[in-house]
Length: 256
Image (cartoon, rainbow, N blue to C red; front, side, top):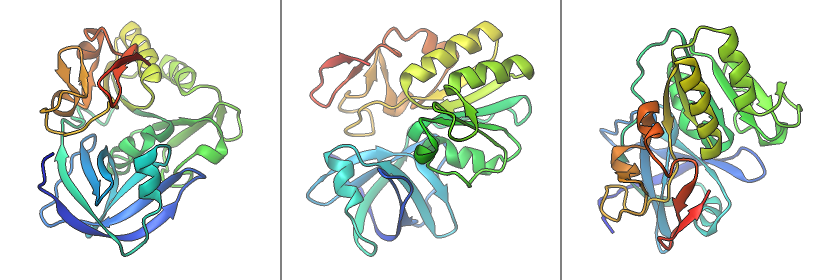
C-alpha cells in the first residue's frame, strides 16, 4: 500500500439516487485533474478505492459513488465534516481531439467519469443512458444532453447503444468519448469501427494500488491504471479480454 495522501474534509454529501451519493471534498492545493483520470479515496480503518472526479470548483472536488459493496456502503455512511484521504490523480485521461463532429456517451454510473468532460465542453452533445428516470444521477446538470432510459420513463426509450447507433447514422461524427459498462463499450466499439469513428473509452477495472504495482487491473498485457483507464479503439480492438473477462479482488479471472 502506498501512503501519500492528502487528508481532506467532507464539505457536503448529496443523495443523487436511492443508491448513489456525491461527496463534495476539500480540494488539495495544486490539485490538477484531467477528465478521465481517477483518484484513490482512502477511508481510515476501511480500505481505499479508485473514483473519477465528477466536478471541480475553485475549492472543492466532487466524487460520485454507487453504494453497492462493503467499501462504498461504508463511504455512503460518512458524515459531513468527517475526513478521508485521497491520492492522485492517476492514469491517462481523455485527450480531446476536437469539439466538432464529436459526442460524449455515458451509461449508468459511467456519467461520473464523463461529467467533467461534458461540463468543460458544453458544445459537445452528451448521450446519457440509464435504466429508468429514478436512476438518472444528474437529471439537470447538462444543457446539451439527450437522455435515454431502458423503460422510456425519461427521454428516448431504449439502450444508449441503440440511441447512439441512430445518432451516428444521422450525424457526421468523427470522435466519441465514452464510459459505461464494458458490454456497452464493446457494442460502441463495433459501431464506431463500422462507421470509421474514432473512439476513446474509459474502462473500469478492479484497482488496488493505482500505480501499476499490483497488476490487479490487468487486461491482456496492459495495466489499466497506468496504460489507461482511457484507451482508443485501436487498443481496444487488440485486447482479447475486453468485454469478455476481468479479474476480481481475489485475482481470479471471471467472465464479464
